Image (cartoon, rainbow, N blue to C red; front, side):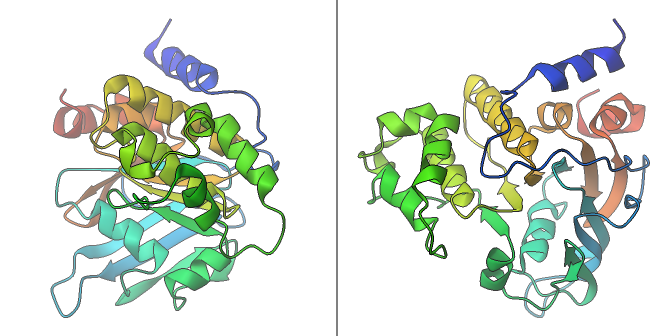
Amino acid sequence: MSEEENLKALRNTRGNKDASITRTEGMSTAEPVRPGGHAFPAPGGPFLAGEGMTGGYGRGADILHDCTIAVEKGQIAVIVGPNGAGKSTAMKAIFGMLPLRKGRVQLDGEDITGLAPPDRVARGMAFVPQVNNVFTSMTVQENLEMGAFLRRDDFSGTMEQVFDLFPILREKRQQPAGELSGGQRQQVAVGRALMTEPKVLLLDEPTAGVSPIVMDELFDRIIEVARAGITILMVEQNARQALEIADIGYVLVQGANAHTGTGKELLSDPVVRRSFLGG
């Protein structure tokens, strides 16, 4: 079996085939981006796009330089690159935590560049930061309930879906989140974000500091969420493993697009392999 066939088989067999996590829309039929440089949006425009983003923190120098990140509905997009490449900064810009000096952000056809993060949450975005992403003194269930703070409907069904996705959380629902392992805390953080019934889930290094076994389990759950029609944008240091599940991948270097392509294209690109994946 060729390398391409191996990657396709891996992507199709990982995760649970049950697409019942909060939303039931099918997967996108978007065309893949071309390798290298900027993304080429699918016909009709991408579901989520940060286009030509340029900006930095406060009055400091620009960190992002004409950076473009685009992903279609139900797809998994992964941002990788060396330390200091601007990966997390790009995600924060898309979520509204970093004002842009140039460029724009669009969600489902709407320009949301001027919206603050709470307004973007109301539009269907959910963000899971890398650290300090749970309320340690609250129980697992209380953490999940906090994720539903904007909802006025009965969210018990969504909580059950989260428990189905992460069974260990049902078992530990009355335990303080601060007593959980690192991997279990990440599950709480992702579960709380899913309680908002998001259209888009932004994950900043969800597998940082966890064991390889837990990393694989988290990636499997991320695949399940995407199969339910939720768009995933993820920053990851475990580049090779993340690209194996990615529909679209972006390699950033010094805040700019260096390589863009499908996960399998980037994994097979000799320049990307040599420079960012260890050969």
